[in-house]
Amino acid sequence: MNRPRSSVLAVVAVEHEAVALPASLPVLITGVGKVNAALQMSRALVDPSRRPDLVVNIGTAGALRDGMEGTHEIGRVQQHDLDSTVLEELTGHRYGRPILLGDGPTLATGDVFVSDPGTRERLGAAADLVDMEGYAVAAACRMAGVPVRLVKHVSDTADEDARTTWKQSVHAASAELARWLAANL
Image (tube, rainbow, N blue to C red):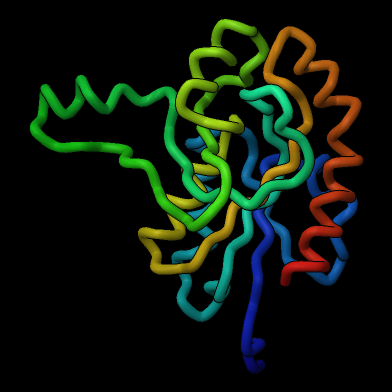
């Protein structure tokens, strides 16, 4: 069996984000959070004969700034819940450096669903959007030498209404992400 010349793997956290994707597109569902995303991505990239030529992490994100809406290709991704400054002081090594991907907004990734105004404001000082898997997907791909693109659709405003808004908008977000894939890949 010959491997296709160019293979793309779409990566989402949960099934809801994949409902509108074409059936012909290979999709990896990682589960929620950085650990699940890192484990599943590493597993998907370990076999060189099945390794995709491109990974596209698509999914929902919370807006950390007013006016952020729609679909965005991420230019920079960073962790918001890793205290890299303290770790560097303790060990002399810098962990969790931001990953530069190109032009576009900054995504903050962490293992918390941001749904309060105080956290939104704090994270919004350094990032435009927030999710729970992007950094892990990008880091695993970088480690494996596989190109990666992160594409996020704003599903909520990372405030007290975020849980309700996410539930109401996730299927529409999947449709928007499917349109992005059709137009850009």
